[in-house]
Amino acid sequence: MAKASTSSELKAGFEEHLEQTKGHVERLEQIFTMIGEKPGGKKCLGMEGLVKEGAEIMGEDFEEEVMDAALISAAQRVEHYEIAGYGTVCAYADLLGETKHAKLLRQTLEEEKETDEKLKELSEEINLEATKSDSTAGHRKPGRAA
Image 1 (tube, one colour):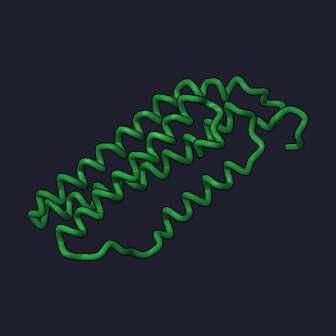
Image 2 (image 1 turned 135 degrees about the horizontal axis):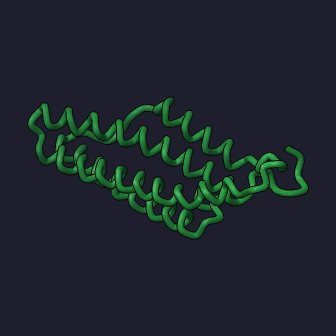
């Protein structure tokens, strides 16, 4: 998504969140170490669908501002899914009295919420710019078929 975005702020936000995600993985690995288990899992079909939607958006021939608005929309759906997941596991950790695990998970949850808020703030300007795009072209790049 960073490569597909034209807004320098949006591109930087995607790149920053990618680095942040590496920290999320490290926290999860830390929790697995604490409980004496190996990290593993199975493919999440919901997230896979969201990623496919994002890939489809990147394949569109939208004008720059419209593409950025669409990328923010896709990214926010991913963030909301992650917020729901981390919120749930935080609640489970609290219920089980696993305060150290809950603290690590809550740290990631807060970062996901912060990312969502940054995307919301960026969308306010970018969505406005997207509405100014030439609506007669179907929000495609000029000279391209709709």
